[in-house]
Image 1 (cartoon, one colour):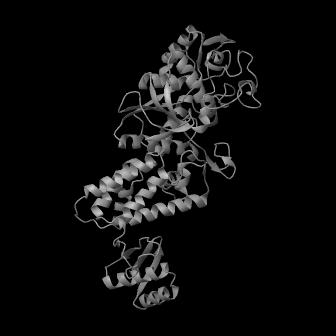
Image 2 (tube, helix red, strand yellow):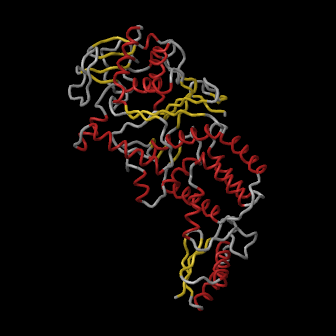
Image 3 (cartoon, helix red, strand yellow):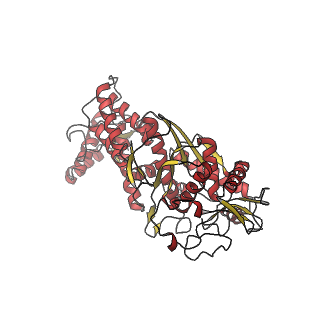
Length: 493
């Protein structure tokens, strides 16, 4: 597989420290509120990446943290703790908030077919490991105590800005414009490893430490969790592009200072989901969650399909029209699969192998999921039997996770008559190649079914006069037709 590496800024052959095994780490959610669909885009793409690596035969160990302490509102060691902010908002304890939104996050993941990582570790569960990590950094001269807090000394790092070509002298204290300078820092980019009660008196979660009662900084948790469950050599670190700096930059600095050797060779960053107002965030406009999409009538997997149509390294523009288009395309794809005859033909192993290689070449080229989607349509057009097509589609869907065969089976169950794509228009095939489905209420009638299919073919060929003529004929025979997306329902009245 060739995958873009954010550190080297180029597409590289993906290689692992231990042949055949991938140690993979994903930055998890800060569980103070629902995840919005922009957050979930990253997890969808990381999920496809993990499943593709397994598809290629790798043994993958994927680890993810749950941030339930230490993540400050500014991401730059200033402001209120996000967990405390959420607890105050809902008049609950921090741990109650953490549990509520952890459950909500994984519920969204289930709806989106996102696999739960092999290890999920809440940050509050490894306090002793953080204390050991910080103590080791102090012993090595990479950290210092000042003003009640422990800071990482970035001046001891040879190349701090691994993701950017910044002039270090030009970077503002605190990273962001308008952030108040922390006078305890020796260097502009130093960051907190451990806060004590001298910084935030009202912090809800505190633990004893060699430096006083306090709590860990946000950045330390990912390094310590990864080292505990992935080991000293991490093959692949994933996250949203907004985490590249300062979060991932700080992870690299502290991890390599602690280990004394390179830590992670490959960094995978997913770009933003954008709305008309810019990057989607919880503070802007309508709070777009998976539950809200469902309330508006969308299948969550339509949103997954929407994400897979775009490359992960490009910003994805969200609008209701764009989502409508994706949802329509997804439903048409399901209908085409549902229309495949469930014959007892034998699997053509040679054809399946050829299409599998095409899929690997497509998706294995920097996780090109859009080309992976194209491969699905290529299979449907292939000159082979339906059994082979269904087997190939099932294989591809083990990576794309769109529940293609399951959705098609549900559709077959609900639609009494599902017509395979005919070669011409006589049986109702659309000019575009879409499948036209017919459902009846009451007793079946083959003659009526054929007339309904002919009307559908006429409509899709824009021969509206013929479509109206057939409707009138059916009406005269006591048949009522209701048009539905992708087909029609008929019944006797």
